[in-house]
Image (cartoon, rainbow, N blue to C red; front, side, top):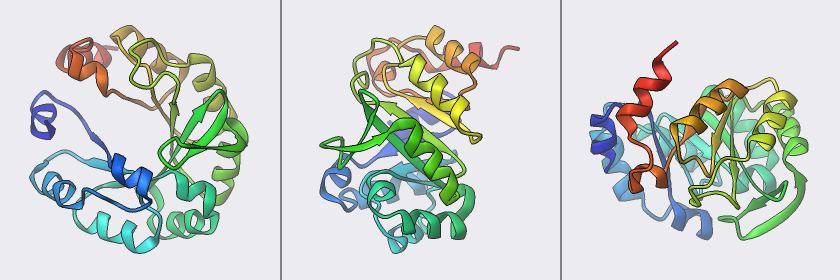
Length: 205
């Protein structure tokens, strides 16, 4: 699948280790390493990355950006140190359900609101954020445009949108709101979005 999306023109591959997100440590290291070796496009990886040693080893295997989620909530010092050491190679993913940030593979809810947490992260040195609306993720409905817009206006760092994206129109709207990028998952596998066509449309002025 990684090679398929690459051949269709994907500018970047987004990989999530779902086992890792739930367990607290990477669970699919072998296949991730293999993907990183064969890809010619940059890849980013999240799910279960909770310490500096793991960040270092993931970057060394050829993954271009490391995504922190639960660790950002539970270990702000790690975020601060990772951003100091690796700068733009670190992204923090804010996964929210009904406006509240969730952790451990979306299983635990925190008291942080999306905007409060985003502003706190930027204060720690985070230079790029991913925002996922958990309720909409995988539903092929539509993104939470209101929440994405609020977040983009609340922080002065690039925001990548995820969750519920199911049409090229959604991509256009996210671009108009100021999102730096969008993560498409289920819609590619169901055929709701044709990657080649979507890229052609998005590259038009």
